[in-house]
Amino acid sequence: MKVGVFDSGVGGLTVLRAIKEKFPNLDLYYLGDTARVPYGSKSPETVVRYSLDCAEFLSERSVDVLVVACNTASSYALDVLRNTLPIPVVGVVEPGVKKALSVTKGKVGVIGTSATIRSGAYQRKLRDAGVEVLSRACPLFVPLVEEGLVEGDIAERVVKLYLEEFREGKVDTLILGCTHYPLLKDTIQKFLGNVNVVDSSDAVAEELSLLVEDEGSGKVELFFTDMSQNLNRLIELILGRKLEPEIVSEWVHRA
Amino acid sequence: MKVGVFDSGVGGLTVLRAIKEKFPNLDLYYLGDTARVPYGSKSPETVVRYSLDCAEFLSERSVDVLVVACNTASSYALDVLRNTLPIPVVGVVEPGVKKALSVTKGKVGVIGTSATIRSGAYQRKLRDAGVEVLSRACPLFVPLVEEGLVEGDIAERVVKLYLEEFREGKVDTLILGCTHYPLLKDTIQKFLGNVNVVDSSDAVAEELSLLVEDEGSGKVELFFTDMSQNLNRLIELILGRKLEPEIVSEWVHRA
Picture 1 (cartoon, rainbow over the protein chains, first blue to last red):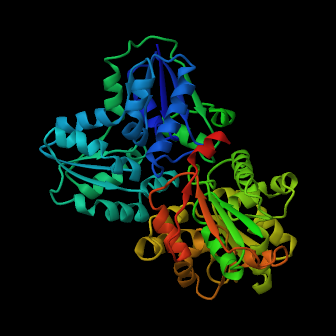
Picture 2 (picture 1 turned 90 degrees about the vertical axis):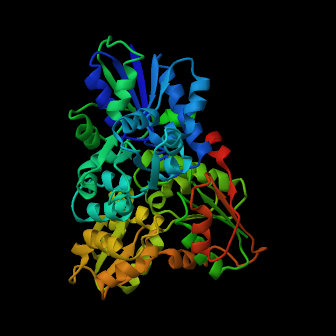
Picture 3 (picture 1 turned 180 degrees about the vertical axis):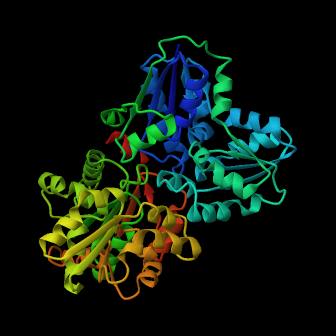
């Protein structure tokens, strides 16, 4: 079976990795929209339009399931994608919420990009389940990760800037509502102490169990809409191996 | 006369402001490509393609001169734009270099986005003029500015991270090679002490003296390709007054 995964950039590779670990035989196609990254600071209309473009590209590869490995796109475009495509569409928000609800004692925090937090997608689902919610946008986390500053002095101060209000029993569980944030997990965990820090990549792979059989040739193809500076380094950092990406810059223009 | 100004986002408004101050009667058209911002982390090919799109949009407004108020676009796309358009094209690199050369005693530093620094555009022009050059990309400065962190603890530490090597007589002049950086000027000046800190917005307005007469209706029209979150706040912060931008999101798609 074929599964398509898209993200605004490289962050969604953390989700791809979790899927690959659980389903080594699936054929996986990944599209990172690096020519238009980030989505998290853009308007809902633009995020929906870009998401439809990405879905169209992966549909042309005849995928059986589409995974939206981007929190911003999952927050704004999931309904449109489900109404447009004839295949199952899995986002990252619902699996993350489900995982948080399975461990919380009643107070859940959620952090993400400005667009994800503004959408209220996480907050609504959590409140519907009857838990208390505290949320905050952390716009500097993605640039910090892309600059490789995932620990040390500056990372600790930026974590303190955004997460001070989550300490001292304000939450017992924190959802990392952005696929870049798992790379800051150690620094966040150290600052928050005894709080469950939840990332949704494993939860997404879990969700796929209901939709796919682990059969196929096991190939992984990576597509990006721009050759960004650190692309190969980040692919190796996240996937743990070298994989040559194909750059499909013409496609953004055609879309 | 009509002057068109474009940038990847809002940073170029610092250049627009300098032009407006010097030529209050010109008709000014500004395009910020907020749907695809930032350019600074993208490939040369993508930056050239986006720049041609922006130039085409402003050409349709029959501008007499085009100002490329983005260092990344000025570094990569200026030659292509000059070869493509039948009107004069002014970038920000040459005026900034000229201004730095007029004050330096021989050692010039230049900072900018990854793409601007990688292009070597500033370094080549400075070395050709016979001065020593030290350069560095500062990828966190733009997100810091957009997060409003232009002074205080975190801003000071990030400035130290990038500019430590420019201290103690290593340079006597520093070019701010990105239109966002003037907003960090005080913190940078405080850290570097007795160094000339040069931004190119005034120098660009100076350059225009050779090309335009200050005549027209004095109107200013702002266009953006996406309604980003802080757009109106940033417009007011930089221009010092409220101006309603027109969002031309369809245009990016058509381009």
